[in-house]
Image (cartoon, rainbow, N blue to C red; front, side, top):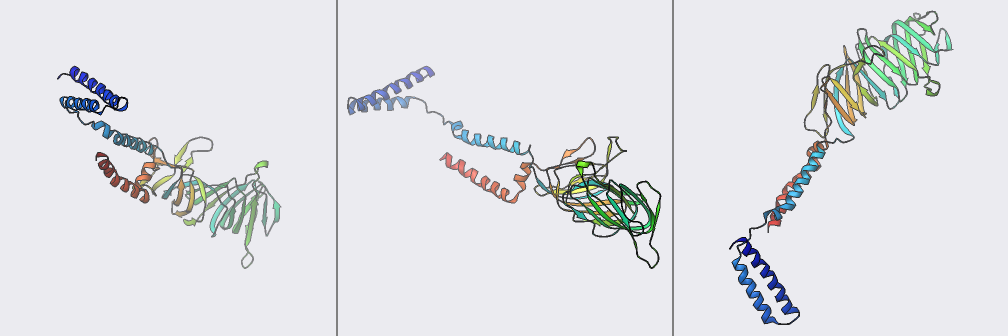
Length: 353
């Protein structure tokens, strides 16, 4: 039987179905309806058996599988807006912004202090006075107190003399004990600062209030001599590990020596080498500490970042985990994936029944 004959027979079967229905519903003639049905049964035996429509059964399964692939591709392309990370960085310099006020907890040996756009200075020898700028050069002195307001920008770098701290855009309040040195106020003459043996210590106090409306944003640069020290309990954002090659040049070099870290929802840790770039976006510290160790600074960071990129200059790559990393390494979500993997074959088996 060719295809044309098969098609004619299928049309005849359909007509017989309509006649059988008419005999039952309109004529109430069951015998004629049975005759039509018997003819249909005989005709169907002449037709070849139809192959099972596999695609009809697999269609929903393939649709779900395709949708899963699309979702997986999207998850591998996008990143969460906040990512928990732990980092240990060694560098020659670092810059950051304070999100909370900070106070120096221990005295630090210093040799040079330059402060400008301040409001007042006082010493036991020369009394209180207003000042815009002070400069201290001491052979023996220590920074006993330094209070910095939130929003301040800090840059800390190692130097051949020890370390250098540059502070800007902040309200500051500090005390320096000078055993031997000189003070210059507003580019005036040098004034000797020296504690007398057995007498009171010479204490230099300075302060500056931040007032952006009047353009007053105090700055201070401090050079210290201690090889080792630490700044702790800092709450920071806007981190960077680079240094400008000359003021206004627009050229920056990396201060990174090494870095290693791990995201909470990522299987592998990452490492960076000396000279690599480390780029942050929307960093917020939960625990942050700076430790000066010899000729470099060690940074311990535990917090969140929006994005983190790193690598050699010109080959910087994304280090931030994707949503797919989160889905595949989060313990609770991993358990959900295991449940889906177990139930999926069961769903296919029930559908085939």
